[in-house]
Amino acid sequence: MSDTAENKGRRDFIVVASNTMMAVGAGAVAYPLINQMNPAADTLALASIEVNIGALAEGQAITVKWRGKPVFIRHRTADEIAAANDTVIDDLRDPESDADRVQKPELLVIQGICTHLGCVPLGQKIGEVKGDFNGWFCPCHGSHYDTSGRIRKGPAPTNLEVPPYAFVSDNVIKIG
Amino acid sequence: MQTQKFKSPVVRWIDHRLPVFSFMHHELHEYPTPKNLNYLWNLGSLAGLALVTMIVTGIILAMHYTPHVDHAFQSVERIMRDVNQGWLIRYIHMNGASFFFIVVYIHIFRGLYYGSYKAPRELLWILGVVILLLMMATAFMGYVLPWGQMSFWGATVITNLFSAIPGIGESIVIWLWGGFSVDNPTLSRFFALHYLMPFLIVGVVILHIIALHRFGSNNPLGIDVNGNQDTLPFHPYYTTKDMFGAMVFLTIFASAIFFYPNFLGHPDNYIPANPLQTPAHIVPEWYFLPFYAILRAIPDKLGGVLFMFGAIAVLFVLPWLDRSPVRSGRFRPVFKIFFWLLLADCVLLGWLGAKPAEGIYVILSRLATAWYFFHFLIVLPMLSLVEKTRPLPQSISTPVMGGAAMAGSSAPREKPNA
Image (cartoon, each protein chain N blue to C red):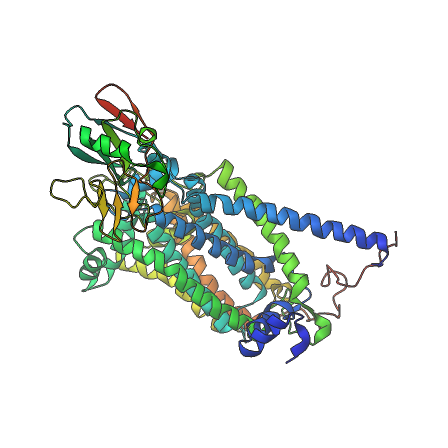
């Protein structure tokens, strides 16, 4: 084979073209091998739940499991709602008004997962420590949340997350 | 050792302390390979490709599979329906087993025809037979895991083979089962062993390759390499050729996976295992059929089992049965005829293994079984003594037989300049 410039150009083209095709092929092979670890169809099918809150009296709280993790639902008392609204928003680490975190003021729905490293905070059951702000307290590293589930003290960076939910009827909410 | 063969100073630094790059360069790059290899010499690297494919897809399947009698079938159906691209990964694994055997069987018959088992490659051959045995055990246990009807009854029949052992047979079978029938303990241990054995295969494959690289590949002429003029460096010549072969193989493999994924399977295995009812027509996977035919041909329980295992055992001693100093079938006119008869006999046995054990099929199975052992135990030793072989070429580079022996001449062809 002669090493004229034209031949060299052609050869480079062949090399680049085949390497490109190989990269495309490798990607096509890798995709299913990696994507199989994503949630399967049956797992996704369980991604929303309905909860009846009709029996939840004022001052009571329940914990439900959604996507394998706890969701806190608390029927707040007037005092708790007032305490959440009286907070000066600018002083918060993750400024958010209570009104932005609820659809009906008496019903607070939040993910029961500390935003620090994923533990479940205390404060749902009677007698559990509720922290300095009468909300929730994470025993792992000492994060305190207020009655709106906002971070007030401790290492957690953000407020307890509000999951997507909607009122199906007055007594039933659908989470997810 | 040439220290300047790697450009990168990082590579040189590592190689000086841990000579992995020198090792790879020596075994995969400059490794001298006979220059007259034909496409049958692609099957070794294809078998390696198949093994890697099986291990990768197998590990993925194990992430989603549940080895329990109450959940195994469901978990496989979940893989097929719910897991992202799970159907694809399972079909690759399922058909991969068949294609692995296709490749390995061609690889074995290549070795039989060109005398690749002869000195000094006896251990190379024996390690290959060990790999075949491990593959068979792995494939059998893998077929049990989906816990369909064929899984269950295949496991029952094959484990019962061991009950033929006089005296201790029954105890061995109960030990294998971990109970009094194929049940949950059997499934759990089969899963554990099915996961383990491919890695044992990898180990033996490494030994197989070490043994291969000791004397290098055999070649279609079956004569020893005489020097550099008879060889080519493995890279780029044979890496390119192996990659081209891999493309062809993958094209066929992909066609099977996407268009005929259940062609080689059995519909009964999509019925959940039922220990109270055996399917009307129970056959093993196609790659076991010749051995299954031998098992059924012998009208005695222990005898059938002995002959079936004997069909593989005979391969272990093959280097000492065929004493002819000429390796390649090309220069053995009588051997060549018997080689094709053996191949036909194995295909016939495979066909008979899928037929019901009655009437003419039984008689044919017995004749074919007899011929199989006749070939190895009588024909090959006799031919070593009486066959008049054709003259061997002096070297791979010297054609002595006219054009025929040197088909595919490697003389550089002049290409008109553009």
